[in-house]
Image (spheres, rainbow over the protein chains, first blue to last red):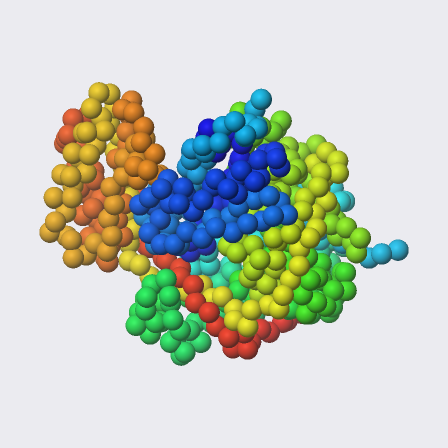
Length: 110
Length: 442
């Protein structure tokens, strides 16, 4: 199942750092999100887009994860030659990650 | 009766729309409006404008702003914004002119000077970690340096009776933290209170971004109306924090829009650094209590950082972007061939090209091949370069345009060229930034 089926996201920028937050539609999927959406999975999906580190933080109060990716915006918003220097579209790429826990997950759309 | 403040968001960037913000100001729902007018690069671009003409470098919307918000100010509403950008004095002049032109009398204007720290950055030869050099090493290219300033001078000016407050690089959340701290009587070193004020500020500072902007993703995330988004507003009291928006506007203030805004552009949620506090959002909760109405809480804080973040503007030469489209069978191959031909033709200019990239829109421009797709019906080749000088940038533009002459079927050439101004962060000890507040009675 794609992450998009049960979670939503937003990306933001500061300098050459992109952050990506991910929240579950249904709180019951929070433990699955925490278990399954690892730094390794994000690194695999983003590959060459991220030249630096990826750090994962938790927001237990709102049941969300925040991935902070350094050297991820082509040198920083103002220097970058990328079509999308802010990495606004990254929030859509992360939702393409495959999560292998189909039986347990409650999808957002029945 | 407990104290309270109602504060609305009026702008999230330098060209944000003021018409919907005016609706909120005129609704009578808020006593204060905050206006963030700067993105990371806006400040450096403002300095470039000022170098051309020393009477500019401030927010160009001030005449429109004063026309639209004359009524709000006339009713005693208070406004706080970083309208000064690179030239707070010129912004203050425009504000005074605007007040007069719109017949608003008796408004005390507060101006914050001193965020321009270019001399400090060069004298102290500050490290520029993202560029891997110190300031002096690239001194000839450093065009600006502004420190992010916090809520302190805003509170001081409100205390002096200022009704319209402007400055240069006031940090986005501080535009709201200042009024909240002042009205609630919260001490600026009560760190949990500062964390709480920062939470409210963070949910307001991005304007319609928090009410449904950058959010809808059908069929998963759907809102009834995103044509006319409402700006967010907050009601803060000692008992609760409410975020909502004007009735009759589109978008939504709900758990989804609030959570995505909560984590927008924060790094470690246990240590969100602003000039006012080290805020901790890990235990923040959001509760829907009515249509487009949420209660939030759970933020805490620790002492503010001893350093202030500085954004240093750096002259990066010229940026050029040239594009051409190909369609039909084999279009991606032809676009790729076009890129290879241009790269070959530009070899004599290599020494003047700092960086160049070739992207295929429709194939790999956003994700650089990390999300493979099938054969596209059409593709747009985009060539983007940062060059040391205008002549080299012209050569890139010329070769991009010459793709008219093949590979076959290239159409719709478009070229853009502009001076390239980069910004890069640095840190300055807080005590080195000497802020001066000025009060002017209109």
